[in-house]
Length: 231
Length: 206
Image 1 (tube, rainbow over the protein chains, first blue to last red):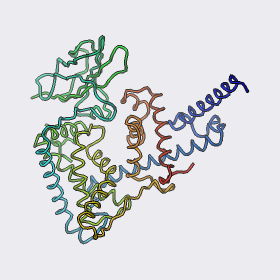
Image 2: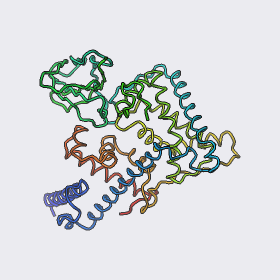
Image 3: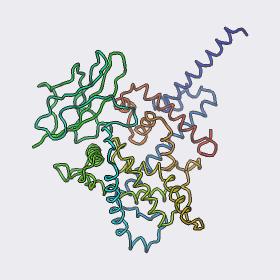
């Protein structure tokens, strides 16, 4: 077999692998059912891999259910602080004493940490595991304000021809990073925006974010600020 | 749970993740009122520890459990600035404790051994339910597995299974294309399965 035919053979293998991958991805995404004829036609090894992924999915679903069940117990107060090695008498007699003690301990810890934390900056809202924020400074509105508009921000060293994306959420709803849908999302050329007459009315409490949209790059997430009408 | 209502006009309203994010932000900045409002949340940590120990079959002597709780409280405070409002604050506390419980138990045991080498304390390592292919994964094992993923794939898996979001919702909220979200999810699932089948991890075979 010459080099060309060997390369052709590898390409064919890669193509088959990619096709199988696409099929398996479609099944775990729920786009194709497991007993689809195309899936059944996969080699046994790949069908076994797919079944293993489906079992992993099921175990993740169970883990999510377990978390919800435990959280519900915790919120209801059904779990005693020493449930791991329970002595029924001890739990009954000391539960609230221990809970109060822990609450006091927590408060004390917070106060202690407050005194120790002298230079630790506030982590900007919205920063987190999905990547670092672009350095846009949100100027207004912030905190208690008479009126939200105009929305103003600034960015030193903004890439040339960049645009910004302004997003505004209902501050009483899900946090922006928790997946709340924005009430308003606008591409803005400058560093200021005022709602127009046709824009949705804003609630009394909002969260807003400004993202950077460079001319030739992917949108970069900016910081989040909150504001509310001071009545 | 009305810990964060002190800064809202409607005291009867259930606080949202946004309220809690704002509360945490003010507490981290040093606002004493916000710090006081956080205390009821942190007071749940003993129950979280107890629930996780029970679920994982971990036996901890009562005196050790208090130490573990203190260890977790200190850790949670250090991590508090990382709270980004993606989940409710209690859920976030629960997940951090889930991830750190084994380490907290080890730290407490180490301190105890240093203080009194001859003292044998009743404690068992939390068992990872991943060891049992037919059993449930368990909260501790699930958190450990998710923590091994990159942040965005982890978020996709979390939203898909824990929040029961569609891929369209996930993609929209994470700024991805739907096809990207599905691809990330597929790769993440492969990695999670790989983790479960690592030597010593047990889990599903094949």
